Image (cartoon, rainbow, N blue to C red):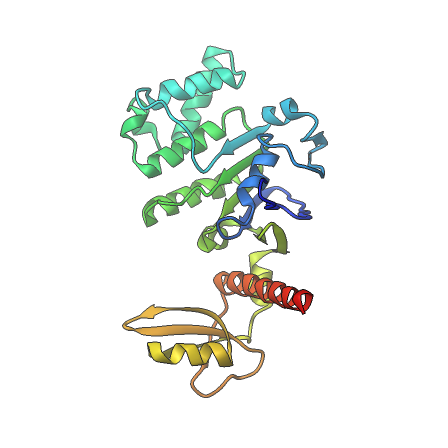
Length: 291
């Protein structure tokens, strides 16, 4: 990008059927990667293959088998859900009216929008719009579904409903879920990758990644003034307010002290430690170069 920003740097991934989580902080390069896979952006170099299709050279063939729900997408606020899906289905190439209506009815039911099928899209809540987004992305029975930050801004109930829809879809096709929300990946994804500052840091199943940290995560509860000292002495994974004090989780392969108790690792621990290690290594390389 202009200014010398390299959004992606030597990314290499193999994604199979099922739910695949692409996890990383905002600005990690996730959306750039998803836009390239979705044929909306040209990479400077590299290649992408989808079931034998060269994604970069044969964009038309990719779009026939692709479903895409971007982070932000436009809707006609005056159109009903039924009419707008019908319009999109025609653009997708479903020209037979009867086939198109049956297909749309099935997708509206899958997205749990049947009671709202004749409601104007401008009156939809955030969760309803995201479910409508899934319905439009599934038009034409895609082989690959890309969803980019789909649960940002959703309340817990809508997030759970959205996860259930994605889990059902992911049984039969490739679904890439790009998100910075760790629970999205831990709840629904069988495989995942963590990217940060354009680089692939980890590619593993969530279960295996969590298992690798067993016995190395510890927790304690401290007052706020004690936190700087803990940061100096230990590898702090995360800290957050809890009942007016600070709940701290640290990484240590050995017992760090009597004030700590062992904690069951989770995917958030994996995520924060992976990012922390990369940043520490980068800082070390930078200092060595300056020296």
